[in-house]
Image (cartoon, rainbow, N blue to C red; front, side):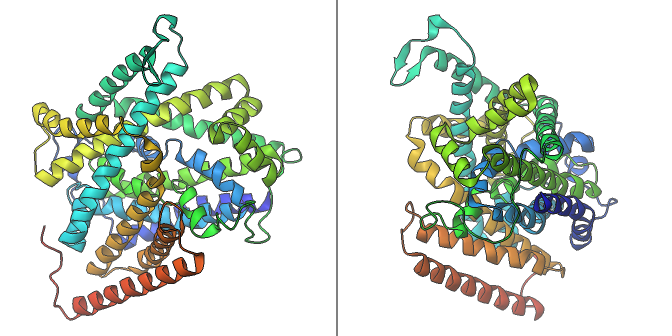
Length: 493
């Protein structure tokens, strides 16, 4: 329990200490003009209250990620608490805040265009393709998953007959309804659907976590949380699932996730002043870290041991079954309802914001004004066409690469943030060290993992180390040119 409490206190303290330091590093000034006022269009650029934006941002970046990822990551041992805490403070929250500030100070530009502005055409092209495909993939997966979950929780015998393959007419009808919702959430002004529903579901995520935390604190004699006494890997098959890089891709949303940086521009276009960047971007990620910490502790406390956790996950339907069991036993009927609501709502809210982000990315890429609804529909058509097309493909192979792609986006975003701070003569080292670490993680993963090159760990780490050294060398050369005045202040956009 001591380790857990220290980690919890560290996350809360960081918001008031390191978060304020980042405000200075990012040159936050509440008198500066913000996109919601300079580019107001009543669609994407709309000023909204801080509490509403905070809850929207929390749900944008959270969904089921900090719950399911933390439950699975807890199997690695107490080291998971360390990653959630240190990763959340010095990587995830910083990553989200600097990415949000870069968008805030650049008229709400989407992530690929920000990357291009500060890193050049090559990275911009890479991010345009990678981020856009990732958004469409996420939207596609969660659109179909939402329909299946909704169909599983309603009963209509007349439609429970096969249509084609494994799909029933019931799922097909619900899918049509889900698609209609996703279209509306993508093209309507952000305050019409997202602005009204998201705060409610975001509050649900927090209430669930607080309820679980209350049980952990008041029944500590019954539910024991292990202490961090070593960095030992508690997974039985530690050889194939080493802490580096597997833990750092398993727990992503609870520590650092590239997906977050794709969502930040939506809220950057709604802030009333720059001073709200810390509570919205850094604060939402700290809250997500707390949620992840609570669920990681709950997973091991509920099952009693790491072997018990592994046995439960293998004998049941994965993390979802454990989350449901904890919620029902610890929070009763209310907990069961919240768990069901969260499991259904989270995929929906993750999918619709992913597709909305895809629309914004495509519009920024093609410089298409999103004020007129006909132009929003025009930009959304290829996005939904691609998403529906992907639904016809077996996702097992595609989804294996999601975790790696997600963390690769985080690494690229961190490098862009490093360049951004260096160009503005700020403390770029706060981004440089996390960028080097995440580069080490993603390069090691793709060379070690079976879905990658499947090389031995020693070879994978060597390649990752050399990659880090090469990129660091290029960055040092960049700094030298910058200091000699041989680079323009910003890459031409």
